[in-house]
Image 1: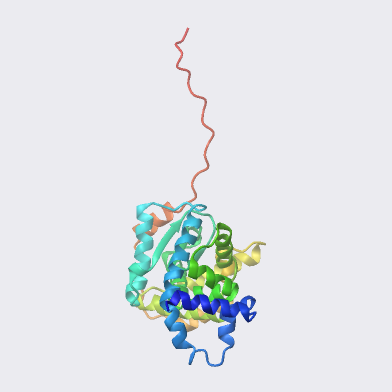
Image 2: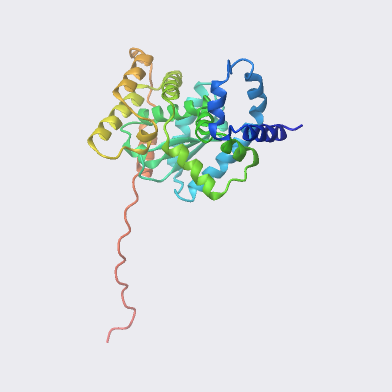
Length: 295
């Protein structure tokens, strides 16, 4: 029997037992010692979920890019890839396994989609004061991907309905919008956020990037949020606080002279900032000159 068939029977059984609304992830977490006897089952289903998650991520990205234009500037793309590649190579992550997307939007945001997709908004680059802050956010999102937090988040919030969508890949446009809204509007568990913070610090240090950038970025977002009614998109899904910034600094330890290098060289950083600046508003075209001969 194929994995897909097994998952179908499992889904039907859960529905008959009236557990569909409970959420698959919440159910697994309540099972006795899920990391023991249940772990081989979850690992056996892993390849099927990986394939289905990749398909879901592809469809979500295609849906997103229809609403947010992709920033095609080659220098900006190269700078983003350089940051991601440094983090990946230093931490034993295959760079080609991570899809990187840079979109033009004023939102101060970055998010991890299913299927190992990392989406960075131009507004986040504009908000950052130096490349170390961008690298810190990237490291945090890569940590969510590597630790499987994206899958956990979706399963916990959407439960069996999302599992069925992953298996069959026949989500309607409305369903995709629902999933995209879920990923972009709900925060990770506090435990997962703390885990991603600590892992991000480790990623940055192994890549010889200063984790202070992540702490200062969060400090500033928290301060800006306290002064205005609307938080940034990244802040709403990754609640920043002085305590989290302090925890990042504690995990990083005291700075060591000469340990860290600049995340990007000045030329690449300037190119990235220039490419992500808001496009000028279109001016009203001047009245065309008449081509008629003068009298």
